[in-house]
Structure formats: C-alpha cells, structure tokens
Length: 142
Image (cartoon, rainbow, N blue to C red; front, side, top):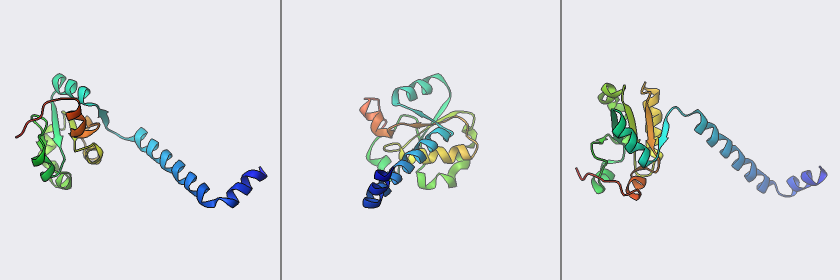
C-alpha cells in the first residue's frame, strides 16, 4: 500500500489523468445506458423504413445538405433550427423517426430533443450519412 501512495505522490499528473479518463468512461457509459432513443446502422435503418411508417430527418446544416445528397424522402431541418420547428413534426409523433447528420453526433443531440418533446420511436443513424454512403446505399440529389 505504501508503494501506491508513493507513486501517487510522485506522479500526481499521471494519476489525475487516469482519474479523469475513468470518470469520462463512466459518464459515457451511463449516458449510453440511459438514453431514450435507439441506434441503427444503415442496413437496419433501411429495414425499419421498409417495414413501418417512418420519417427520416436530416439535421445537417444547409451547406452540408446542398453539398452532398440526402436519403430519399428525408425531411431537412438543420439542427440549429430544430427546436423552433418541432411543431412541423408533431403529426409524425406516431411514426418511427430516423435522424441523421454527417457522422452521427449532432443527430444524437436531435434524438434527445425529440424524445424530450414526446417522440417515442426515435433512432439515430449510426455513422450518419457517411456510414450510409460507405454502405453503398442510394442518395437523392434533391
């Protein structure tokens, strides 16, 4: 035990970084376990879209949406305007909502926003449009 205390005393920065990493891992895992939305890969998203009524929501910026294509039939509402435009989506609360962005991080925030506002069947497209393209799935240019 004395050796551990000596190590901590001699390497406080190293021990502090270890504690910070451990806290970050615990926080991330807790957030993952308590989230109220699902995560779908591209193939799973296609299955859901074919199996049940769904809304595909693109939350990329206007510039990103113009630059690349979008999933056919997707509704585009940029993430920074989502809270202001939630009323446009109210009629889709009974549908499965699949949300995507460029790589999946902003769409996770959008999924949180949707679940907090009464949407029950919400899924994040894991990897976003990048994963969709990597799976060689079609994009619409409109």
